[in-house]
Length: 428
Image (cartoon, rainbow, N blue to C red; front, side, top):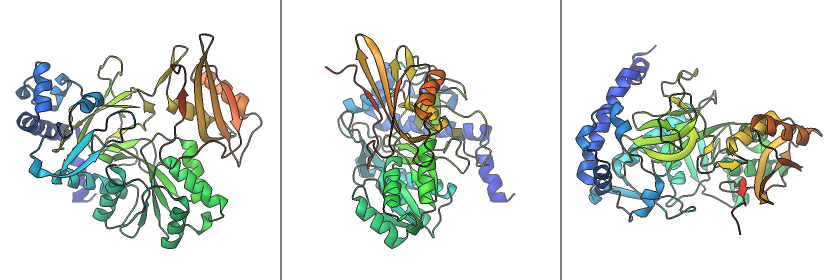
């Protein structure tokens, strides 16, 4: 083992890491006390002094921060650095409410680029790759986040942005890109369109990184079969940095994240109780190193777990499970909590089905009814698929659902995120 590898592994040993995180947390509390009106008020209301927080173990005494609080503030009200140090602004999409404006200092931008470069190195991208970037630019974090990671790595960035599938395929062919970046929904759309046009064997793609939405193994397998590549799940959210705070490795058994930048906890979404490693709950993140808009115990609403064991891949970074859904997307059907990851797991285990589905929930005569439309596998269809899927839904999720198996490519595709759950019970 080289000296450099030994030093890297030492940095992530539990005792060393917790002391490092404690130092970062104390610095963060000093910054917030000096610069953040938002957190001065929030901690005062909670009866907590900034000086009460001396180690990472004390983080449990801090109140949670949620997105609705951020939305209620004026633009830049959460800034925790002098305006002269702010070099960039991003914001959330605003699709579910008022957008949250997020300021970045130069260090924030550099730290984010470092994490993004680290993600790319983990999945085997190097400075000889040509990286085709389809997420949006502008206020959204994804496009420019991937671009700065590419440039830091030394890879060739191809900043396509979203939409115009004809142009996307043309540039993939002309520039012979080796890496595809985007949402999994758009990756599937491009793969299916390339196959329809007989172009799949002319592409040179070898890797793909998909993020911004939950996607399952059936979708991964389908895209990899068509495009002849290996795909990886990247994690992030605008309020923290953007995509790149974690990624899965070649073993695809979870998301490696970077504990010198973020501190992760898992809580019970209903009670707020911190759960031990291995238990499923809501991910809570504290930004240990961020300057422009640090967040204390931010409730992401994403459902996952922290792995109690290191990943067999050998990377020193801790591991969380892949995101299984969102606590605020979880639907209760006949007293059972159901989230998208469960449905995707049942699809994966049922022969004859492809990845795309829709779940429609309605109330008839005071009773919940569930219809799940799912596409058949075009290569391996099965006449038993609908019956087996309905049986598996009852056995695994414990709900009774009507099932329709649709021909392949009949459900809608998206250039952004796909909407899969339609809860119509509260509609007039």
